[in-house]
Every structure is written in structure tokens, then in C-alpha cells.
Image 1 (tube, rainbow, N blue to C red):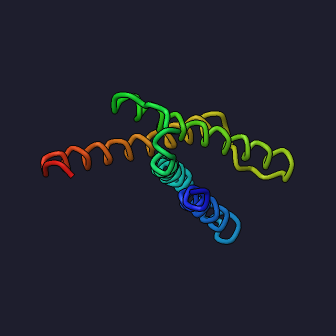
Image 2 (cartoon, one colour):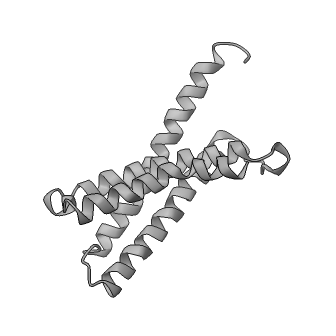
Image 3 (cartoon, helix red, strand yellow):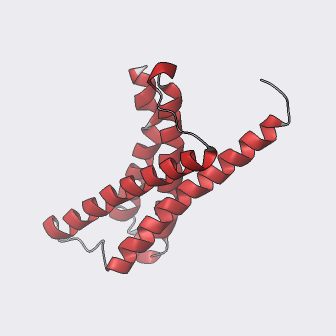
Length: 140
């Protein structure tokens, strides 16, 4: 089970590595500043997806009860917000320690966090639509 849980986190690692390559090798954020919002949206989507995969891999007895779909969506958006906050702290330390300029303003930080949550919300809507469509197919 442990290996499967680690594998569920690989997409998040891939987004992190892609971000580092885009920033350090291609300076893509200097060319297209809006790319930050796109990457944060993708990151939020991937965090929500990975969180669901981790939850699904827990033994049934160890799974916390989530409740209605709105509560599950709230938890997933919250998870994306927490990862986004950790990312913004990482950027803050990059600015202070490495003299980088990755956080131009508080407005940029807030926009990044909103995009993290929006990406997770898009995942929730897509998952809800998928579940809704499958329910018309009868029992599994």
C-alpha cells in the first residue's frame, strides 16, 4: 500500500519539476507572466486528484467519513489551498535567501492562491459530472 500512495503523489512532483524547468531553464514566466496562473490552476487540479487517489488507497477502516459531495469538494479545495500556501512560503524564502524575485506583490500571491483553489474546484466539478453520468449506467 505504501508504494501505491507514493505513486499517487508523482503528478504533484511532476508539476513541481515542470515549474522549475520552466523557470530556470526557459525563463518562461518572464516571457508570459500569466503562465503562473495556469501553473497554479494545474497544481490545484493535480493536488485534488492526488488527494482523492490517496484517500482511495487507504484501507476502508482507516478512511475518515467525508459526508456529502459538497463537504468532499470543500476538503479538496482546502487541500489545494494548503499546498498553495506552502508554495507561497517556498517562494517567500526564495526571495529572501536566493534573492529571487518570484513574489512581486501580495496581489500576485492572492491570485496564485485563488488559482490553486479554482483548479481544485474544476477537478471537483469534473469528478461530480463523471459520477453523475455513471449513475445512469446502473449498479457497478
